[in-house]
Amino acid sequence: MDRLRQKFRQVTGRHNGKVVPEGTSQTQQRLERGNWGNKLEFILTCVGYSVGLGNVWRFPYLAFKNGGGIGFSMVITLALVATYYNVIIGYCFFYFFASMTDRLPWAHCDNVWNSPNCVVGNETLASGEQAISSSEDFFTRYVLDQSPTIDEIGTPRWQLVLCLMLAWTVVFVVLVRGIKSLGKVVYFTATFPYLLLLALLIRGATLEGSADGIYYYLTPRWDRLDDSSVWSDATTQVFYSLSACSGGLIMMSSFNKFSNNCLRDALIVPLIDCLTSFFSGFVIFTVLGFMAHAKGAKVEDVAADGPGLAFVAYPEAIANMPYPVVWAVLFFFMMLIIGFSSQFSIIETLVSSVSDEYDFILRKNWRVSMLFRVSICCALFLLALPMTTQGGIYLLTLIDTFVSGFPLLFVGLFECFALCYIYGYKNFAADIKMMLGREPFIYWRICWCFITPGLLFAVIVFKAIEYTPASYGDDYVFPNWAQALGWLICLFPVMAMPGWFLFYYCRNGGWKVAFKVSRALPVWGPALTENRIKDPRYTCSSTAPGSSDVPQDSDGGVTGDGTVANMKKEPNIPVQNGVSSIQCEESAANQ
Image 1: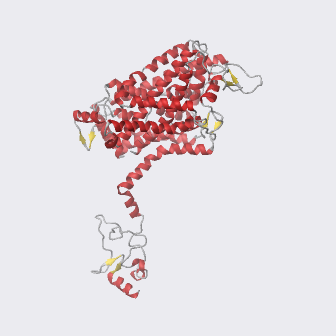
Image 2: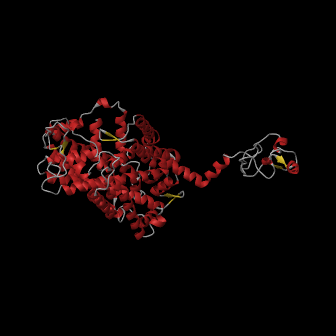
Image 3: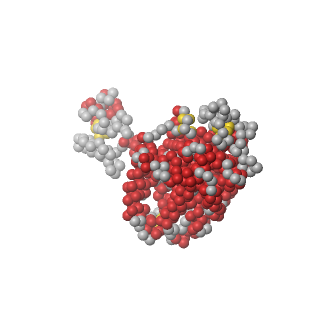
């Protein structure tokens, strides 16, 4: 909680109960942490952080399907996401380089690594066996060299290892100077993808069958509204898409000026993010409609989730377009930019969070700061290596499944509770008033204090009730040991909240209090003195069994001032542990 409050003071400019003059605070902050060059850099960085690969593949798939301690939890969740996120960017690098040829390798079945069941387009096998498309064959057999199950994890694929290393190298080079370099890069990474999306939309809209895809995309399925999983998926997607409750938006905001209009930013960034997801849906579904038309199938039969959409379905559609190499290079270049725009902010949040905690070491000088950034990138690179093996796609899917659900929902729930009921809504509203000149409208108070935590709690309950074992695709359910590993990964960031509370409580005297109240009181034992002196445990040289030197009141309780109160005894006769000194002496003489 202290870290949470410290972060609020850092953002709002309130330190140790005093308001620091804005000019002085900004100067000191600029020397230690840096500031955005201008307002546009902050907005573009937040948009780039929020708009990621999930907007391109996760939102369209869900549309197809349905029609302190908190700070530590955020950082842990971000670290887990960053680990597998760069693996996906590595896939994009692989496809980007593979596209630079006169004939796309996933457009035919003449490669040495193609399986006997590989087909192109609507081709069928004479043997009647199940066919596999050339794009899926490329992804599973060449890119991943995928093993049948997660039990056969295999060895790292050197091609994927090099692509992963390149991804981390780009991240380090861009973030070597922190937000100073990040603020300049986002001018390109946060804007150029929209030009590519627009180009892909125009091209997709000219393909046969694209109207069927758009019609399917815009047609609501009202019968799904009574399914709680729809609302659960929608809530999770909002968290995933907006990057809410993961600390990034708070961290980026902390580099702003004190008088920044945070209300305006809080409306602009979600609006742009949601519109981007909606716009990306058109880009994807025009191509899915084209694929369905070419195959003579329904749109729902060609849609796929996650990597299957980005690395199987869409590449297959590109292969059937005129000038497929050009569109393939543009598409995967766009995927790289979108992925990096989020990954840059994720890593900067990790680095800044730890650096703020230990600034006396990590911000000592530029060399130490750079070495720390190198260490973060290298550590996460090593943690991601198992995902480059033949069974790595299963591990990536497992982590994505368990990290993108419950952890973010619990963080959001406890964040609302901490803001409104521990830090206090009045304090939070006063902080906003200091920044904006007015307190939030009553609408925000109702949402933050009641509606949002209530909805989050309901979604958590519904997700728990309707939980189904994690799976890869539609036909492979992870074994029990993998399910257990997934739950451990899920609990890791969630348990950071109560874990930190207990640690802080014990470190600041709570353990001593718990130890004392768990021991027997000194007055414990036989009520009559003649019975007490028969046991050496109640002599003047010892205390009651299991008791401690806890000060007691007249009835055996602990005194308020920490002194030992006299028990009920005879006048002028000192008493120890319920036995007078005379009785102690008699007992000792008898023994």
